[in-house]
Image 1 (cartoon, rainbow, N blue to C red):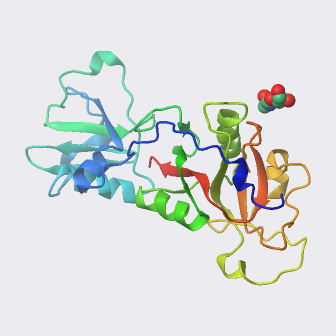
Image 2: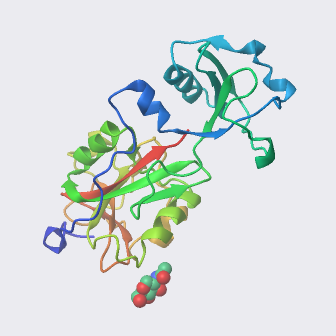
Length: 267
Ligand SMILES: *[C@@H]1O[C@H](CO)[C@@H](O)[C@H](O)[C@H]1NC(C)=O
């Protein structure tokens, strides 16, 4: 890609005015990650003996403890005793054992949400990594501004470093005219300390913001043919998604005001 095609940007409103996470209260913020699935009555499996539960201050604390342990899939919390029991397994019981909201010890079960907190046309679910992707098209930003906006909302610019994640986003967007025909930032760019340095053309030192290098063998099918080409006088520092009449090709491009795709982990 050559010069940043700012005159090709169509500024369209789509409904992006929502927050995935309520950031005002820790307890509320963590609540949005969970759904109350159940409800057990005298059916606690042995490994869920509540003797290993421990006291916390509130449900939000139990939720945060679970979020911080990668092995935690959900938790029991007792509203009265304020006891917390993180679980390393996901419970799914047939409906007939689900009773009135609590098990006989007064614990309520919270499991990870299986859908995005807000399901809209611009929030996409990715099951293998339990991520939601949110596409913003009505508030264009430079790459670093987009990165900060995703972080402020509790996520990151989308890191599409696996085929599953690439396919999820691309299948949803290609030829889908619900997504405006503009350019979108992702979490892929040259290392920031290289942005202003002269560099030889032909060096593809792009990496995702998690430090993984851009794997061209994986990403090649999505690139505009010929890209990344280090065109544009060595200033093509970011990998963006260029709608180009809804074809949504990946391009290397000079940073400019664009829409952006955030990723929010559900776990
Ligand atoms: C998108 O539309 C173009 C033009 O009609 C077509 O050539 C292309 O195969 C479509 N791509 C997908 C993935 O459907």
